Image 1 (cartoon, rainbow, N blue to C red):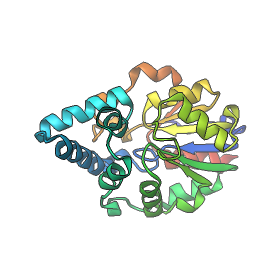
Image 2: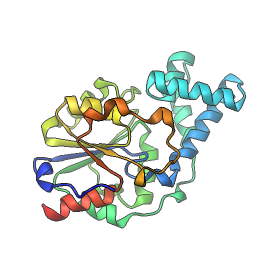
Image 3: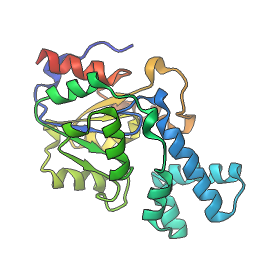
Image 4: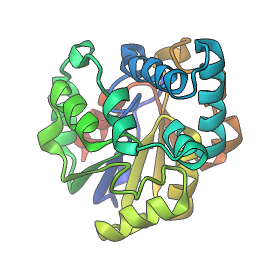
Length: 234
């Protein structure tokens, strides 16, 4: 769907920052659908709500507070560790190792990071299953962010300060355009990763961010191919 990027547009990049869910692994894998189901069940059990009402509230919390976890903490003072453990108790065998993606990431010059609203254990297990975990300098998760999720500006600033990242030398890959707004303001190059051929997937209407299109520099539906083009031609 997308044309190969011009590697000269990435010649300045020394820090490569990747979201995890639906970015490092493709939307059609639907790994995140397992997490979504578990979040709905958590809300249902916590508040004794029927599943449909729990799901509606879950999405309301997501929209208003950035993540379901953040909303539940603010409104119901839940234990975040309990939530993270339960919603990430999923089957990672759905993920297929991606040696092409791994080779492309390995060849990129500079440091590579995973920056996720999930927790470290989830990121490590997913990246390990993909065969790419060893290529990353660090994982900046929701705990490292002080439980304040993207797209909060202070979370990006905390990440950048921790790893001494200068925005003009970094690129961020995300599946949600709203999460590229602050990186763009900080001077980062931004890449939106979309479902293959824009076919309907688990992603729902409430996750789509047409209002943030101006914050997106590049769009791809093939992250491995996109990175291979950059790494192979530099």
